[in-house]
Length: 177
Image (tube, rainbow, N blue to C red):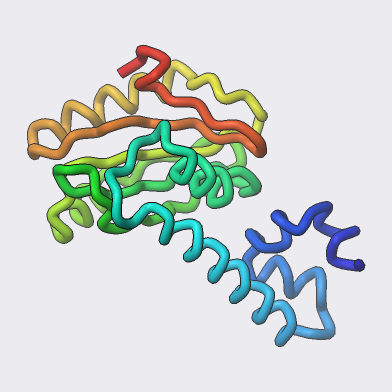
């Protein structure tokens, strides 16, 4: 009950890092590590739902995965889902933000990883701590620039989604890509 009071929800506990959990449980690092492990298993279960069928940002399984990965982060982060040319899941990676109000897409790392695993399509998502799913002008500009760069490398940017605690929006479905 102490953790629920401290974090506010089970979802917040399960998405917290071992370090954050350890601060809440200063006398029991082993429990913090185990809880972080449970959180990783829960995320793996959601990620498993992306396997075996083409992935689209409008799919409920993708949206649930993105919301759990991003919705409760305390800094802006970028989630990248790497797909093959038929949209089948290959991998996903989280790039943690350096600040509470902005996140830079690590283009070199993202491109290097996409080429290493022969990804032909990407869905990127990032969170807005403000609770507003509407993309900023800098989100739109960065997405268009990234899409152009990836296109020259024969990698298609399928969508850029914005996640908050309880909602997710699509720049593609919003006509911004």
